[in-house]
Length: 165
Length: 133
Image (cartoon, rainbow over all chains, first blue to last red; front, side):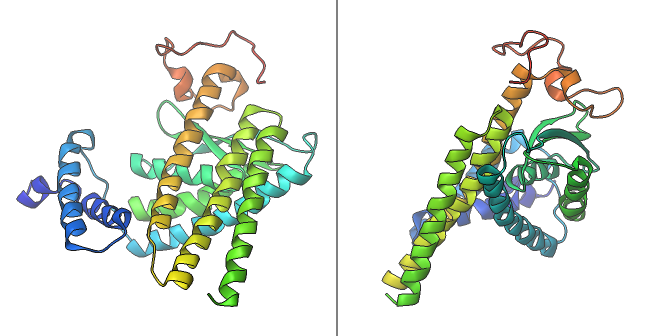
């Protein structure tokens, strides 16, 4: 382990913490930047024991694309869910549980996928299988459960595979 | 403040109010616990998001300063909303679902909630055959 990695166990987390601190203070002063840098140094160092293996992120461009796709889907999801709540009777609604088998193995990537599923069209991730190879998803209204599963796999999981693995 | 800015901000606030209302209305209207979970996790995201964009736009056009707090609020919202939703869903699975009432993950395994032989301390096991709501 190099000296750099001993001081900065998670370089990206350090940067994010410093930036978040400056944004929280809401003014760009030397004071805020220095304190943000101290936070970025101390917090990852204190918590390093709980997060031993940081994942390697590849494809920064894919991360931007993924964020845009998810943001757009959140807007669409909101409208769809609003329409279902306002205009669909409970008898016509088809709620169901589906299983999404996972090809992702990185814990951080599975966490991001689970969060994405919860924030996007009519789906909430509810549980993980004991071996971590499948995710349990609840659909608000899914006439065709297989299509929902395929969409999650092709739209989100494929992109996360490219970013994390 | 320019007229176009005023119109845009008002429009965003109306949209925000609408989606906030629909999200809360869904909590009352939907029948089962799992469906109710969908309303606040989604419909409110756009509601809060619109208020935040309106707020940023107001500070830029009316006072000429860029405010970053709104970005932080949406960041924390995106971090916390799925986690809370997951907790509620997990409690629902523990209390109201049996392995048979859910689809199988794959042959020979079970969902993490049922895999532990003894229930975790403090978790009350539902009596067998409790219907899901």
